[in-house]
Length: 348
Image 1: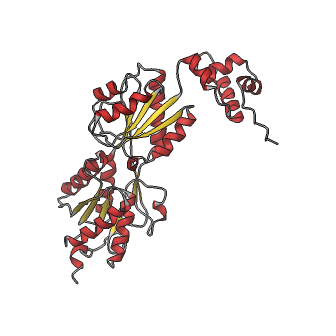
Image 2: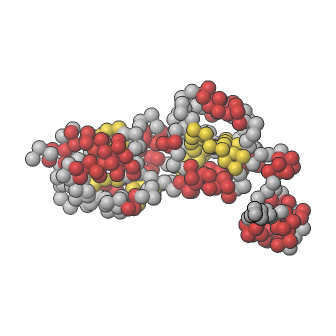
Image 3: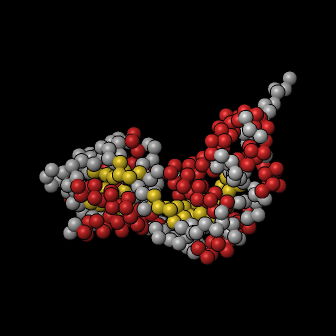
């Protein structure tokens, strides 16, 4: 015997629960004006309680919209905002189509992706860590569809939502200086990436401002293994350092492993600061001091901005800037006196 199907809630169910007319519910669901705030809130409470989902075909006929967004990720390695974007798209009543683009340097690769979906979607989010496409090029490629870029240059005139990477990089470097460190090494991310470029420049600028020479630097790829090999390379330089700035938390995890294999303690011999504050960072050994990028806030701000552009395309293009936050844990030790010079200590 087949199980009975659960009936989906209808507009009339919502209207009955909220104690309003069918037409009022339609206006609220379709974000129309002329509904009192308290009535709108009562309808929305009923929508949530009944788990009401609008009928897409009917919505398309009524509004001319698909309620589908496309998220274009330029390699999944840079997909940190993905879970938050998917969550907030659902909250805003959209279905999200996710596309990975492996060749971000080619406008034709973007064109090929959008050619198949441009007529089916209401707007696009692009997680774009590379500088190869201009605003004009993206506007043409998107065929007039509203779009928001995530993770582009600070100061870009594209419609975008970004973290202030310069601010985050400075916080990390200044924290190490405030803890007494003067010989600071770096494992940075790939330097063709916006974030890696800016964090690297911020670190160097802070040290120069304090009359210090930047320590040795190696380039990683944001993966754990590159942090591991990066720390090994730093030790092989024989240049002294008491702390490492890591381009992200995953590379910091790999670096901690390599340092311990070399007989060094974290943070007693080498301090380390990460970037991102991934969920696991608080459970590293030791818990990782890092710079938090709140990807939930990023996801909400991105979907909110795109939804606004879809509803009101006359909105001026702007860049919405979010600010990272230093999270202090146990992976950095204060140096009361000049610390052991790690790079040189390997010979003793």
